[in-house]
Every structure is written in structure tokens, then in C-alpha cells.
Image (cartoon, rainbow, N blue to C red; front, side, top):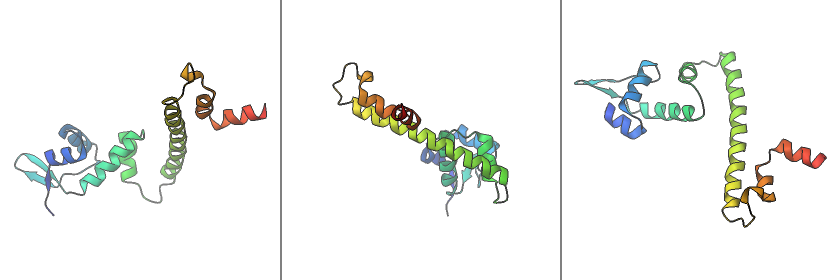
Length: 136
């Protein structure tokens, strides 16, 4: 398979060459070699960078990603952390979904002001708040 130079990888991954060098310093990716003075990478690095980018957008630190990339099935502490982080992501997804749905509603809502719309408030309410209102 043909190696990709750093500029090609940066372009395809949507990152800067300096980000690639930073990730390399932190052990997240490895160069395949050099073409003159330019680093080259195996095309598989794009999948690794997609994982790193996804993890970064989910709030993982570089150190956490580096640890995850070297983890083994026997790493019970890491597995427990991943379960906790997955729960946090579920909460984030639920919150963002409520916000998205609320914005979609307000795009066509005629209530004045929009933020006082009962349906909008209901959409944004957490399941716990809805349960408390039902119990009251």
C-alpha cells in the first residue's frame, strides 16, 4: 500500500500537520517513514485519526485517548472508566436531543415569547423534572 505524506493525511483527516506532529509526540499515531524531509504515514492512520477526533469531540483528553489506545481487556480500571464515560455521553446525548427537538419546535412555534411556550418547556424538561411534575 502506498504511504501518504503528512499533507495528504492532514487534508484527508481535516487536521493540520502540526496536529499530526503533536499526536505523534503523544504516541497516538506513528509515521510510516519519510519522503525526503516529510513524514509519511500508512493509510490506516486515517482510521486512527478518526477515532482520536471522535474521542476528542466526546471530551476525552489526549492522555485518556493514549491510554485507551494501549489498553488490554485485563485493564479493569479503564473499563470501569469507560462505562462511566459512556453513561455521561448518554446524558449528553439526551440533553442535546432535547435541545435539538426544542429548537425544531420553536422554528415553527407562534407562542410569545418563544421560550415561554409550554410545549418548548416540556421538550427541554429532563425526565426527572417531568416525573416530579407528574408526581406533584
